[in-house]
Image 1 (tube, rainbow, N blue to C red):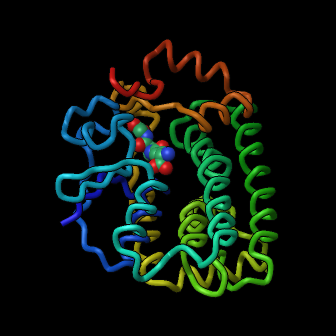
Image 2 (tube, rainbow, N blue to C red; image 1 turned 180 degrees about the vertical axis):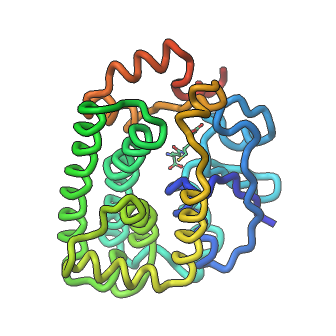
Length: 262
Ligand SMILES: N[C@@H](CCC(=O)N[C@@H](CS)C(=O)NCC(=O)O)C(=O)O
C-alpha cells in the first residue's frame, strides 16, 4: 500500500489526497515524528530531504513535492486522467497550480502565523491580516477570470486545475473569506465541494482546525519551531513582518529550510 506523509491542514497534502481518492488508490497517512519541530529523524527524511510534507512512498520508491507527486500518480495510474487533453490546456492548469502554490498559499499561511501563533499584535497584526485578505480578494478575482465560463478549472471535466485550487479556497472559506456572492467562483466552489473526494479532505482539514490547541502557547513553550521558506518568507517580509523573522530566528522558534545533504 502507498504511504503518504501528511498533515491534514496542509493544502499541499490535500491536493495529493484528493488525487489519490480520485484515482481510487488506497494509502496510509502517516504524520512524521516531531514534525512541528523540524527535528524528525525517521525514514521520512529519506523520502523528503527538506523534511516537508507531502511525501509519498510507493514500495521501494519515494518522492516529495505535491506537484511531482501529482505527476507521478498521473504517469503511473493514468486513469482516470486528471490532466486535461492537449499541451496548451495542460500548461494552463499547471500555471494555475503554480500561482496557487506560490502566491495564494502564503496568504492563508501568513494569517495563521499572525492569528494562531500570535506573531504580531495590535496595529501590526491588523495590517498584516489586511494585507493577506486584500491579496486573497485579488487572487479570487484572478481565479474568476481563469475560470471564465468553464464548469471546472480543468475544462469540461473535474481534474488537475480543480485539485490545485480547491484546498486553498477551502482554507480561505474556513477563515471567513469565501468567494464573492453571486460569482462564478462561488458556484464552482459549491460544485467542487459536492464532490465526495474533495468534501472528505476538506472535512478532515476543518476537524483539525476545530481541535487546534493554542499554538502561541506551544510556541512560547518551545514545542514548535516553524519553518519559514521561499514564498512564505517573502510574504512575511512584504506584509511588514521582517522584525518577526529576526526575532523568531533569534529565539529559535523560526527555522529556515533543511538543507539537502546537510
Ligand atoms: N513545494 C512543496 C511545499 C510543501 C510544504 O511547504 N509543506 C509544508 C507544510 S504545508 C511543510 O512540510 N513544512 C515543513 C515544516 O513545517 O516543518 C510541495 O508542493 O509539496
